[in-house]
Amino acid sequence: MFKPERMSKLTVIGPKTVMDVVINKLYSLKIYHIVDHKKTEELDIGSPLAQGGDISDILIKIRALCTNMGIDPAKNEKKAAEGNLTQKEIDSIRRRVEKVHAEFDRSMENMKAADENMRKLDEKRILFERLRLLGVDIDSFTDYSTLSYIVGIMENVKDIGELKRELNKKTSKYEIYHAYCEGKTIIAIFFDVEKKNDIADVLARRGLSEIDVSGIKGLKGDAWKHLSAAKEEMGRWAKEKKAIESAISGLKKNERDFLIDAEASLSAEAEKAEAPLRFASTEKTFVIRGWIPTKKMKSVTDDLDDIAKGRIHLFSEEVKKDEDIPIKLKNPRMIEPFEFFMDMYTLPKYKEIDPTFLMFLTFPLFYGFMLGDVGYGIVTLVLFLYLRTKIKGDMGRLVNAMIFGSISAIIFGCLFGEFFGFEELGGYELMHVLSRYEQMNELMYVAIAIGVVHINIGLLVGFYNELRAHGFRTAFFEKISWMVLEAGVAVIALTYMGYVPLQKWVGFVIVALSIIMIYMGEGAKGIVELPSIFSQTLSYARLMAVGLASVILAVVINDLSGELFHAGIGGIIGGTILLVVGHVINIGLGLISPFLHSLRLHYVEFFTKFYHGGGMRYVPFGTRDEQ
Image (cartoon, rainbow, N blue to C red; front, side, top):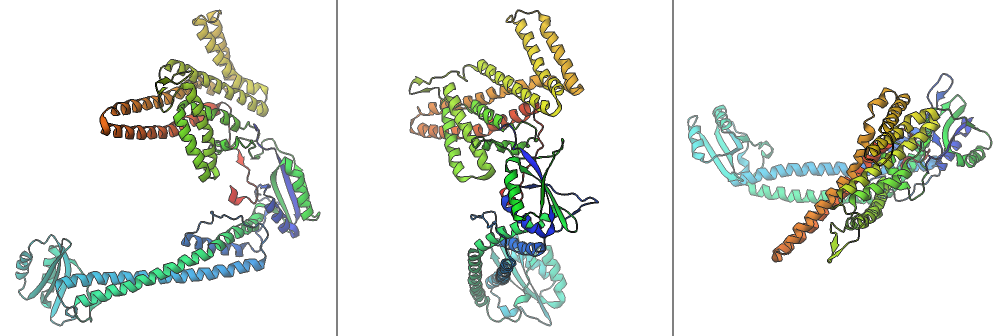
């Protein structure tokens, strides 16, 4: 519980003729943490298995299909088979994937064609709609030898007569058609081809946006007929597109499970095929180095020896002093959710104390101390119990940890005598040990006392860590010296207040001695950090401050809503809304603020006293999708 799982170093050496079976066995055991080999003059890096390239190609197609079809392979409700896929099975998967890929590509091409046709038809529909408003026959827009025309849209044309007067200055040989649509003016002008540049200049100055009508040359009849035809054809293409979408949806439904299972199975095979890239290798042999939980050593070596029929050599190497050993946290089930906070920070080194248990004890304590309300605790407890049924994985661990925090909030709510900020219910005062609203000084003293205890626990744990890593002298001067400093300051304070019958110089001597010890343990860095021990202790005052802010806000909400309840029906409605919304907001703040401040007290004030971290996560071969 206080230490990570004990690990042993296991090396596997054997001929390449049995490498496949060894890889398959290690994958199925899911217990061997492989250490990647770095190329040396004596030992090269291994090569992937022969089928690796083929599997990778199929995987690329499967993942592309999953992405394009909106399928998430991670949402695999069935556990993928761990047995080896035969070449026949791989070929079968490839053929089906290629078939699905071809069918999907064909549907997407048809979809693209349908979209393009609908886009063009929509452009024609808009054009025909505008020409219909102008009242000009479609066959008017053709090629002429002496005549030209321009069709376009102009904005802010209040008087078409003004435009005509400006055109008259250039030529009188023109015919203009116009119509108003959606705040804009649609214009078609037919004029002498020799005056094209002059007409174009006038229209450009007027801000004409020209419409391309070249696509309707050769059409006959009025615009209404062609508009109806365009709408009808768009309807046909819309049905075609819907049929294509239905086909794609059916393909996704029919092939979803196959693609997910194939992705999982081939991913496992790909991981096996690429495993030799992590091995040391010669022309005929392979070498695997890795870590395994000590308690599993015998069963694993027996399994490997049995599967290889005695053709491999297995031996445990001596662990070097500064070797990077993978970390597998070992905590009871109740404490496991608090490993989330270690994952979020950093894992302990192999020889360090695992602080997960300490987090289990103090994180809910701090959280509950700050939230400290029976009503709020019950609401958050119900919320987290509900979320636990919906959320799994890492966030599920966080939810489980917060359940403990909510229970702690209920307990502290009983100690503080608070229920949604009320200290009285039905005219009866709630029993309490300490009133946060009326006994702020006492609450401050309790918070600081908690800080003193918490920090000194950290120093004692740090003493143990340093004792294991560097011996008694280093541990004593680096950790106990700070406790001596605290004791000296306490003696000075108690002496001056008359609580301790000692000479006043005694406390100063203890402080001076502690400073010398700190310098011997940490050098100048320790001297510079002398004030930090006191500032960090005072930082625990946030336990009081955050909780006090919460209860004051609750009291304000209750008082304001109480006043509204005496102001008639409207006041009752308003008071109820204020009461509900106000407490919802306060609970929201109560979820966030105590959580963050509790984390800060652990990560900054507590962990800095003993915790180095930087441990390497234990990732057994074969657990790719479980991390």
